[in-house]
Image (cartoon, helix red, strand yellow):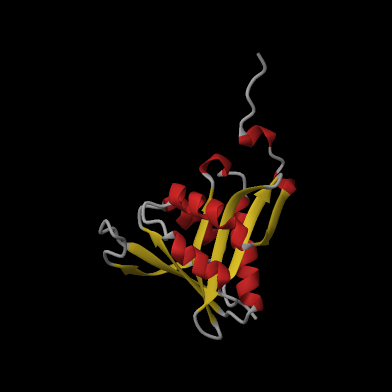
Length: 161
């Protein structure tokens, strides 16, 4: 019997498509959010963000399958906030997260952001390393930020003009 292909064996990273989301993407976005975070955003909030004309909502897609997403908003005319970035666990460690972060940063910068912020669990070292690759730095600890009482790091990135 032939060996079963795993996503890492059959995916060419160059076949990744990053595109704007549509409301039709909501179910898959929510599924990935729920697989990725114990404190997943409710589907109703994700739906609101997908409809928000000021939000930047991106999809990572491979062979017409949504494998990840990223959502950012502008909190002010110069301050952007990355709300959520998540990759389907079967498709992690293939640079898709890095490509989503890069595109989200570019889009927020294009909307005038000079400063970006995000929160990340103190225990999520993998995500912290990803954000540090894009020059995010830990600014402060947000005590008991998550529903289970875990603290979060507030990470910030100053963008060049």
